[in-house]
Image 1 (cartoon, rainbow over the protein chains, first blue to last red):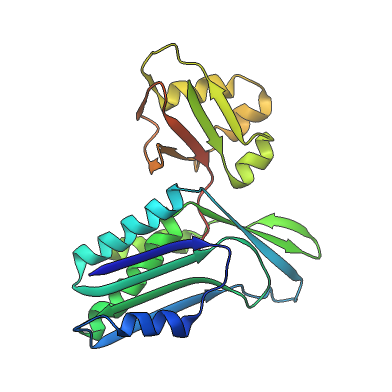
Image 2 (spheres, rainbow over the protein chains, first blue to last red):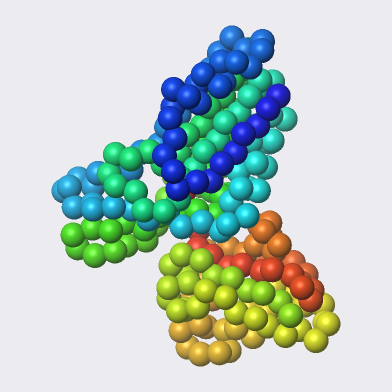
Length: 149
Length: 83
C-alpha cells in the first residue's frame, strides 16, 4: 500500500496520477475524483482563494488516507489539494484510489472526500463582482460523516 | 511561550495572524487561554466565543478541554471548507 499526499499551488494532471496508480501491482480497479472551482449561478465568481494551515493540512490528509487504508484493502491512495488563488473551472482536489476490486475503491474515495471536507484545515474565499466572501461550512458535509460511523 | 495562530475569516476579523502568550511554565487548558484572549477587547470576545470555533494543538484537532504547555503551538479557526 502506498500513500501519496500533496498540498500545492501547482495544477495536477489527472492522466499522470492515473498512470501512477495503474503501476500499483495487484490492482483491478482505479477510482478517481476531481473537484473543480464551480461557477456561481450568475457568473459573478472571478476567482477563489484557498487558505490552509501549512504542516497541519498535510498531516490531516495523510491521517485521512491512513484511516481509509485501515478500513479497506487498498493498493494506493493519491490525494492532492491545491492552495492559492484559482479561477472558475480550475482543479482544486484530486483523489485517486487503486484497489483489487471496485467496491473498496469507490467507498474509500467517498470516505476520503467526506473526511477531507470536515477535518482538513483548508478554507475557501470567493472573490465575486459583489465582494469577497468566505465560504460557509455546509451541514450536509457534516452529516455525510455519519454514514461512516 | 505559547504560539497562537488564527486562520481564515477568524484571522481577518481579529486582524491578527499570530499571538504569543506567556504562560510562566503553568499548565493551562485551551479554555483558560481563550478566556485571556477574549478579555482583550469586545471583538475578540465576540469572535472567540463562537460555538463553531475549532482548535488545533500542535497541529492536531483537540477539544477546548485539552491541556496546553510552554512551547506548544495552538491554532483557532472556523469550520473548514476545503475539497
